[in-house]
Length: 137
Ligand SMILES: [Zn+2]
Ligand SMILES: [Zn+2]
Image 1 (cartoon, helix red, strand yellow):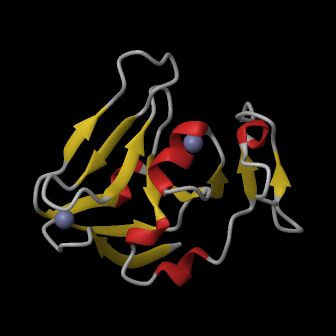
Image 2: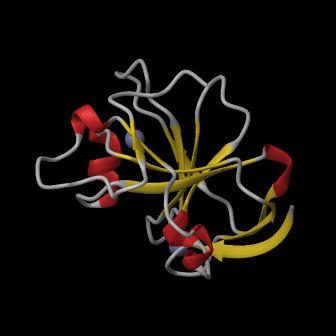
């Protein structure tokens, strides 16, 4: 289904548009996401690659060279807001839902991943399927 969702970074330099429904809505509890989220899970949706477009600004990118499962993280070079990640082998853009102008379109995750790394006080909501690591498909 087509959508018309906009979003951007905290300072407004980066702007983007999403034009198709996400393929997956999830939350990640891995150590890297915990670091970047500030302590909670990272809530994200996987957007088909052709339905995400930057409309303003130029994102900086970073990938940790010392981690085999490191992803490319795109963020605002001015305010530091992390907008999205790309992972080798994944056809899609992993978009952080908090950067949407209307984050409520997310409507909650359907799965939780890397729960074996979740902080002890975090609980996965009822109805959300929890995986220890990354599910195969
Ligand atoms: Zn910014
Ligand atoms: Zn993660």
